[in-house]
Length: 118
Image (cartoon, rainbow, N blue to C red; front, side, top):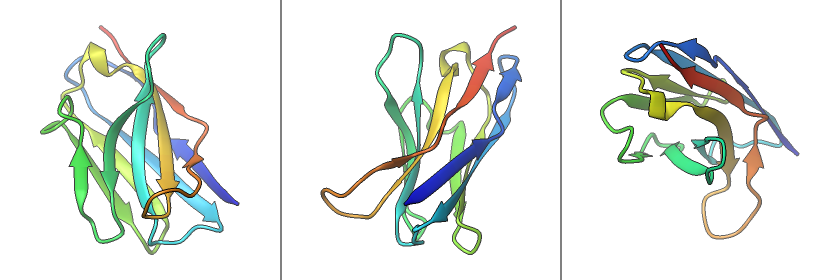
């Protein structure tokens, strides 16, 4: 079992910043890929950013240059620094992790709400 707990969501004005954090526990390994996904009402869940154990990253085009994903392998945490937030970023943000490679289970956090509004 792997448990993921997110924190840091909230209400912010356009152009503002938020930092999301996720802590992994249970049968978690630092070799696992970690990432952030988001889902807006009525929309499909989409990948925001991923990071490998070695620190390689990939971002959705819509957030490049504004969001930064990072991880602390000693603490089993992953963070998402979100700057220059837009109304279009409003969604529930989910922490995700899985073992590298094809197949195997995905593990998900409970989600944290991010609302960008004037």
